[in-house]
Image 1 (spheres, rainbow, N blue to C red):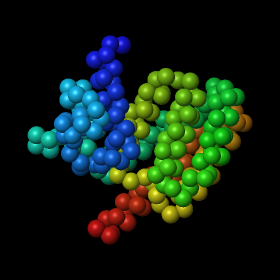
Image 2 (image 1 turned 120 degrees about the vertical axis):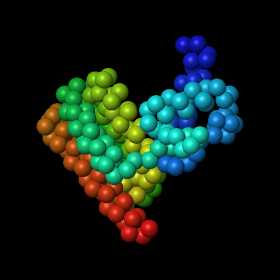
Image 3 (image 1 turned 90 degrees about the vertical axis):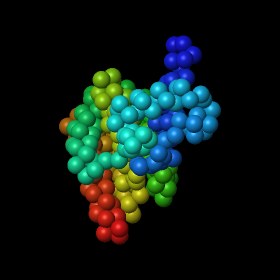
Image 4 (image 1 turned 30 degrees about the horizontal axis):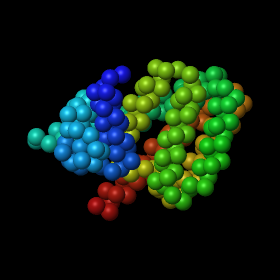
Length: 216
């Protein structure tokens, strides 16, 4: 890969990570010069990164400016429907194809993440790592690509469902059940456990949004 291509990829990854980590939230305006200064790269790769993110619908136009896109209720519901099915398939395939080492890594993740239940931001990052590990354990590159796109779009949600009271402990219990099914090589149980995990996360988010509308 040439230097120019590497710089473009790095700029894209840096901006995407900043959105994913909440440094830029839905509605925030992204300015080429500010991003170039923040990340220490020239404006050309930043411009190309922003164009790519706009193509992926992660950014949208507000007049002449580019802002971080936001999801309306219907878009969020559609995203969770797709995520539920794809994540369930990933768990099913992980139960079938994961190596013993990959399964031990998943178990270690659950154990380590139990210490993060009182820190929603840290638990959210750990949650992404956990799900990514299941995706990789499916040993299906095309499924991994589709799930990467889904999870990039999830970054457009301003809050994490793990911030809801008690959700961290419950989510960790659900993760334990998912890994247990994968450990048993029970494809149906793994599929169902992960689908139910996503459904509960969606219901939690709907309640969060309802509460915000009431307070607003």
